[in-house]
Image (cartoon, rainbow, N blue to C red; front, side, top):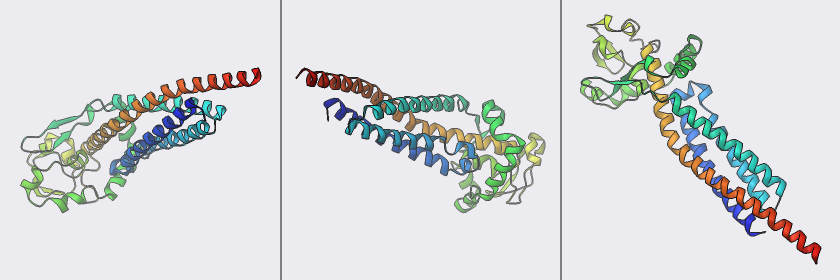
Length: 269
């Protein structure tokens, strides 16, 4: 095996290692309650990670056994996958650019406004057809059940750093002036006219605020936070993959030159 092919084999092993955190980030995203309820957002990162892993293995085989056709296939596929990963990253940054949050006096958590998120996210998640399925899925999850298990008193709850989903789906909007009984039981609102969601709140544990616009905003807030965290891993991975790909291209050209020179030398002899 020539020097260039040895270098390419090492680079493919590095690309193989890069696919592992990408797959892990995708699995982490897919395991979150909000992503479990939005099937379209669950698997793109995992699929890209698995494809990068398989292509890296193909490149390693091609370099180790000097299969030039397989190496060319590897370079083409890896270029496509890196481009797709970059597109996914850029798109994720654009649609999660707006935070949508605002501070609540006397609370450690924030609340979220639906209109402050990107149009694409709102349209994709909050349409009546999609939201009916999503809200049913959220009601069946343990997102709100955990609050009642973790917090007893009002002081404990108000000082907690709960997720956007919990802050907007498991309790009524703070502006309504409901009185705390437990994290998912609120009574006697003093200002129901403050928000249309005040009339939608229901102490039935299967309903709560799952039909509120506030809950839709909380879901988008959760998605934004999780994708921003995953993007850190994906950015590091894509930078390493681009670096690996550029060196692999150079090594592939050198390998072709070495092969051509070897054939020329054999013919000369």
